[in-house]
Image 1 (spheres, rainbow, N blue to C red):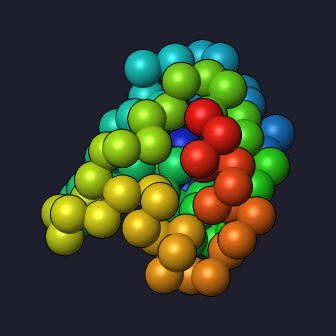
Image 2 (spheres, rainbow, N blue to C red):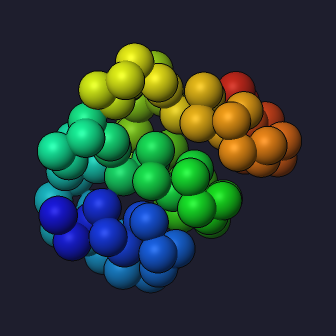
Length: 88
């Protein structure tokens, strides 16, 4: 979806706009089971992740391989992202 692409690329203003227009899309999964939050985590985009978390993105959701956003943050070595996720 456009939200997945914006989250993956780190376009925080577009993410804000898309979530405002369609709040339910914040937890939609792509064909790999990835949510916009997971893609933001993979890209290391803390500003995007923060927006999604404030809008109700679910940290425990898992992809088709059973990985959550927390798993992805650890795999990528994003310590500050991990702290952000744990705080929500």
